[in-house]
Amino acid sequence: QKEVEQDPGPLSVPEGAIVSLNCTYSNSAFQYFMWYRQYSRKGPELLMYTYSSGNKEDGRFTAQVDKSSKYISLFIRDSQPSDSATYLCAMSPAHSGGSNYKLTFGKGTLLTVNP
Amino acid sequence: GAVVSQHPSWVICKSGTSVKIECRSLDFQATTMFWYRQFPKQSLMLMATSNEGSKATYEQGVEKDKFLINHASLTLSTLTVTSAHPEDSSFYICSARPVPPGGETQYFGPGTRLLVL
Image (tube, rainbow over all chains, first blue to last red; front, side, top):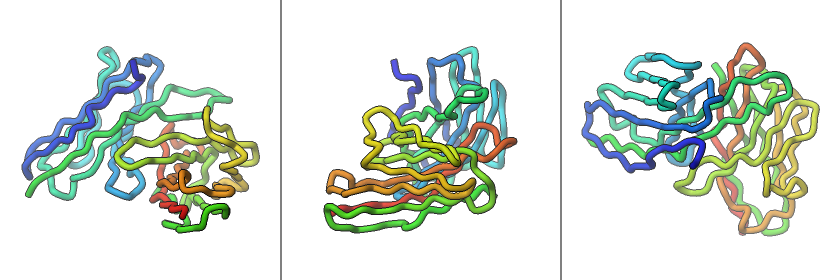
């Protein structure tokens, strides 16, 4: 079993739709959870960053973490064609001195929002 | 805030030459920088982790003599692909982890596309 599972899609939705992107994970030590957006031929851009369980909202984006289920989600409201990109989930355990702070990534979900 | 730059953005070189890629954190200091490689339609593959002033830690299967990493300051890391060959052609992306309090996240550069002829 991979540490982080993410459906690669592709996912195609009409403009204005609510998009739900998800990742599951197996390592219960993960405490920090991130969502990155990557446009074609560009570096990933940090969208959302959460610690432990709970919800976090930023504009049209909402991130949810359910540690009991080892499940994280990213919701995009009122999706726009400019949201078309690959979305990567990433996570990391809590660290103490001497750790190397590596992130574990999902494979990414390719999203297309059609006008 | 939290901007990371990479230079060059793309490079074409002949087989056997060496190529240096710079990664800079522009508006924050980074205790740790990371180098990734990404093939088309695939996720990021971590190559190595570097801490300022110390030797890089390479992932299994990554040749440290092939991919030389120097992290000379809290805002600059360089990756040198030595004696590049066509199979080294790829998209190389760096990221930087801010000094605390920055959490555990990483901010990515825009990437460098390398084509070895």
